[in-house]
Length: 623
Image 1 (cartoon, helix red, strand yellow):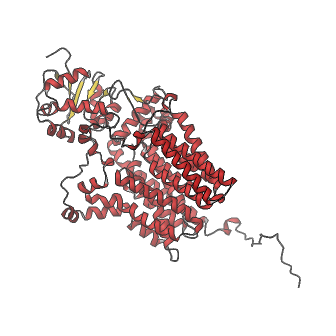
Image 2: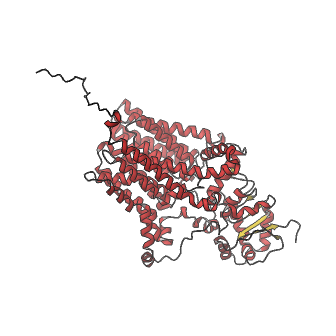
Image 3: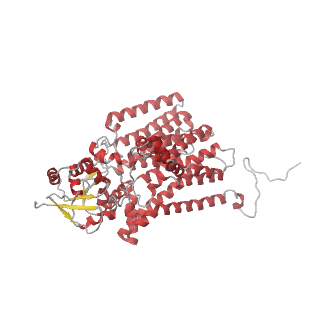
């Protein structure tokens, strides 16, 4: 019997046409997408408002950290005409100190301020930029978390997984501190770029575009700062393993990744580094050592990919990878042996004991365990749990999803390792774990109905929940661990570290100020003065000079003041720094000034405002 049904070419099938049009053909997708977009917008607005609340109360300038204040100073200097390649902070440890920061962050901030100036004026434009920049970055982070979560799961419940990932990101307290209003330092940008890298690197197998964008994201992240180098390096090693494992199926994509990594790193070096500095052994910032690793690693991947296209065999890929990799490492260690040491190795022991040992983000897991063990769950519980679940999900994932899980696992493992060495890695670990945890649960619960169960699970396992458990268990933890010391969380206003606290100094004639380390950036932001001390490891000379002055007896202090041509001495009475000075030298200058004993080479300055900030002018005319 002859059929009257319409015929179509192979691969095509007829489908009924409904009056509702094409939208009716996807009722299960469109509403979910719309709901997810609305919930994303609501979540972003709610968290952004919560993060902006403290700055609304005290002023966004006072919400800045020391690094935020220094970044604002650098952006102002760039807008005022300081040279593009001139990375000196000329008012720090005069006649100036070369900073280890990159212009990558200065450009969008300067552009935002200049664009808003005609509407809001100079001060209003700066305040608006301090709010808008971290808020926009947090929105980008949410979208990237959702995209990563979607990429890592297959089948139904993708929208639930995306929403769960964004919810975890919104509850990642270690990371959120870097997205508050006033946060214009580089950490939030690095986290967003790391999420970009994870998203594109997890799709290298499928697309050369993903491979190229992964290389660009990695290079841009390292051009901002080297904090994420271990995580990016781990993913690059995993990509090299992918090439060895799958050969010609991915050789072109991996070759594109290597080319993008090499090309973008060389281009960024040309754009950001002065020609005479490209070959200098700068180990704490984007420079010759990092450029060698990035460009050399990219070239290595290109060589292995090219040889595999000519002669594809696993033994050849293993041999070429080993030769190029070992050659790169040998070259690095020969040319830059000093980069093996910690960037803080050159910091004077006195500066280390008074300042560096008390910086929270540089503390190790062991130090936090000794000082504040109840905070361990909040910092480490969530990423470690996520890592364990991700390893299990990686072993159960379908083969075509295997590599994206490998990339996620090695990156998260590297970030956890960083956070054990220094707590600064905990923020990036939390934000990267945000999409990985719900995706892991979605893979492990593939045979079960998800939805509300998945959302409930991520709420229970969120960083906020871990932190709450740690704080609730503090009495029990204190009995078991018995910490002898505690980390003191300083209130910026009470320790004189806010811009408004130091604004009275702007009324004094421009001069050189000796003040505690943490006051330095805010003094630079609030006044035209120069300072000797600021919380940066490169500023070893200025920090040491300040500490020697504050702990010296009056005759020696007079000589230090004369040698450094100091105009003002500033202290914050009742602050921790003042307490450290008194402990180090009960009869030193700072201790005497705190007791009201003013030597004859100083004259009190009336700041005309009550507070803890006290200043003295150096007398040039003798007693």
